Amino acid sequence: MISCNFSLKHYFDVLNPLKKTYAIGPIGEFPILKKRKKFLMLRHDVDFSLDYALEMAKAEKNKGLRSSYYILLHSFFYNPFEENNTAIIKKIIELGHEIGLHYDTTFYPKSPKKEIEFLKKEIKSLEYITGKKIISVTQHIPSETREIHTNLKKAGLISAQDPDILKSLKYISDSGYYWREGCMCQHISNFDRLQILTHPIWWINGQHSRKEILKKFERDEKIKLSSQIDSYKKMVHRLLVELDSPKKEFD
Image (spheres, rainbow, N blue to C red):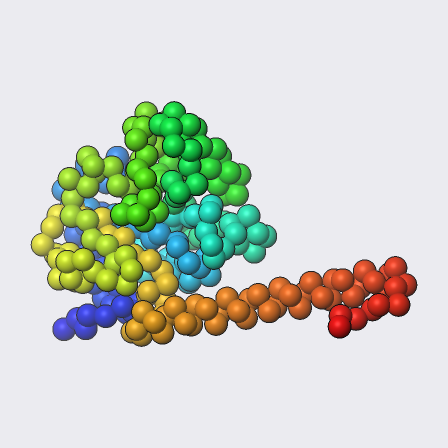
């Protein structure tokens, strides 16, 4: 019997048996997958941590699964252009997964023409990081942010939230550490075509409360920040020594 919880064990307990009967892949492969009678698209919106995303990407690789990982360019929690983060994004691709743009219209101009131009520029920026063509996108917090009014299809993009895609399958989401219609395990075998959205932070740190998970994320980020500050201090110290400055240490 499957024990329902937010854990990688549960995630794979649910998905592994489906590999025999479902075609499983990322959102960008929808044009191919939709030709199959039974298919499942896996999607991860990376809202908090690229480190957690990489952990999940590795776990999926080990289980023979491929997913879409959607990256924010305006994240409050990570900078995709930072050297280590760029390396993580490339590693996720090397593991066989798709990288897509997780666009946030909070930062977009309020004009249908200008907003699609802005989105294209963001795609170019993400392509610069990945070295790969970006073919799919998804909106960040669609319940709170403005929709893109211009037809994304005309821009040659696949949107995970395209109404034509959503009406053709069962969509399941864990947004906010909450399944809207109950855990995916309660529905997944009842539909031939599905899209499952999960957020790595909930699964890497699963089986804890939402509060505990976010507290752990906060601790992890503080450790990273402290390390970065220490590195900065050492760099400045080296510079001051080279300049023969009398002020060789921080107060």
